[in-house]
Length: 519
Image 1 (tube, rainbow, N blue to C red):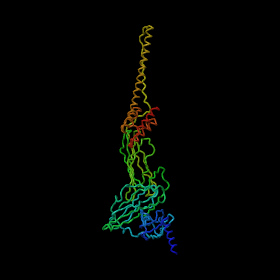
Image 2: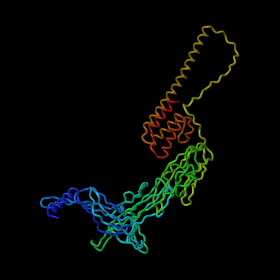
Image 3: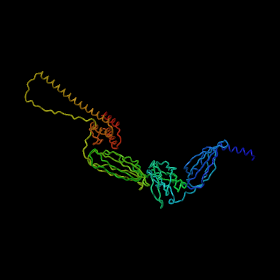
Image 4: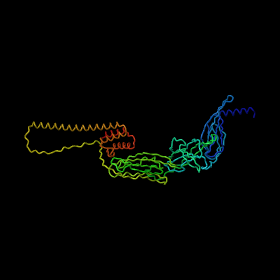
């Protein structure tokens, strides 16, 4: 080839490189095992977007970019370098090539062998995942703990990638806790070791079927005799596949999706009360059965009691390799009548995963001795008793003397005047009593409006109900009120008070005024 043609070809290559940019890929290792890492470097003569073919067979743990500018003979040039740390995911031979901007890089071949066959008992450190179960029933909450087990002293632990759970709902057991905050002594074979918890969570799949959980990746730095003898290594947790099994047919009609184990205790604070007083039953439930969907343990109403429920405690945790939770209910039974009464039996259906069948946890009925005879409460304005005057017969044993006609007229006028005065007095008395009662009702409403807290409002509410409806909220059942509106108001006030919640005072006052206006 003539020198002139060589020069022209050289210039064309230079122009092409300037326009499109040359891409070059290289790796620091060409042979690794599954779980081991290598460094990839992609260099470009100009910033372009690119993809690396077959990179899906590796997990990219880190990435950083750098640039270099130089001026030679007054001409500037730039180069860009992307550096990746990649972990091999499976065996095979994988050709890697960077492609982008109309350019293709050179091809490098990476051979990935089988994962290290070093037994766990001989490793210096490794990631452990518990529990090892592979199948769960839908509705079970799944404990997940990822730990780093080490038999040597570590200088540092860095999280490179957290575990991935896909569409599984996760509750972090210890949010915000730093790595290494939870650790305990253990043994690997006959060697002393330290178990360091990396992550703990409670998993709740949204449906049945197969799920894959990707393990985390951490970088550990082991201590050496001096600074230069320290070394770092990346560790990856194994991928886990779990199967979520559908529940068998035959679930009870009132099944609340409690799946697992269930046990509990119950105590009644008193077995003898007066009418209107409350006997409180405490039901303490625990086990691996998911109790989060259990909102109440008694459904329906009782003809013997007014019933109010409250959840006073609920918690969940991981114990070893099992999920545990606890929920405590308090149920107030307020008797509506006297005598020997029995609380309703409580039955909570659940699916026992150990015996693989539906069962019932039962709280037996309790007997309560109720003393007293509640007064019948009449709704509406109290009716004043009617007074009937008795008449007596008078015998006249003497014949009266004749009375002049004018005298008769005077006596008639006096009698009529007396009758008018008496009637006027009665009317004034009734009006005065009605006015006094009306002022009392207004005064009671004003007291309700002036209440500063729940307790003061409740006391004023009781005073109002006694005065207006001859009803004692502290000693009588709300069902004795004839008005459905008043029963609803009373039920809301008592439920809020029993649960320790703030009473909606404005709403109660408005409802009371509305009930009065319809009477």
